[in-house]
Figure 1: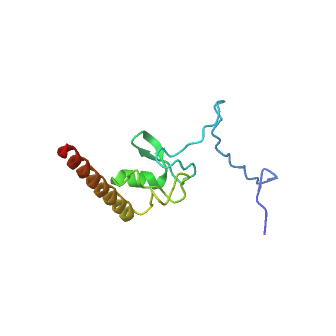
Figure 2: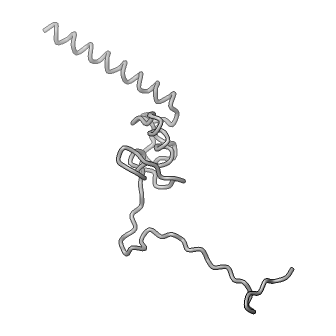
Figure 3: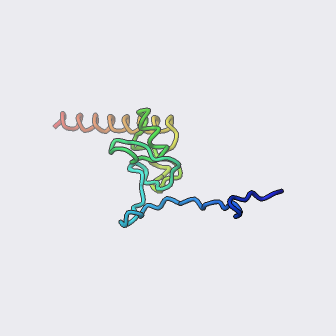
Length: 116
């Protein structure tokens, strides 16, 4: 194998510059998803609060109209299996259960008020 020489010197690769958040002299602010509070994602996406406010998972769901409060990615620090799910089907089931429970509670209150 032969080394390539340019002007009598061996070719040297320049090190790639790593982007740093605080090059402007200000403090580096860590970005956080406004829905699930995740800080690490392959891509930041636009949400209801503007560009780059949602993680990849929440941003995809927001764009398709399926971002509900009950939805959380499993890796989210705010994920609780009792009140959250990362499956759209299960989120819809949770919402139906919640609506039926509220309608039963609401009808009971109406009945009690009308008897008085």
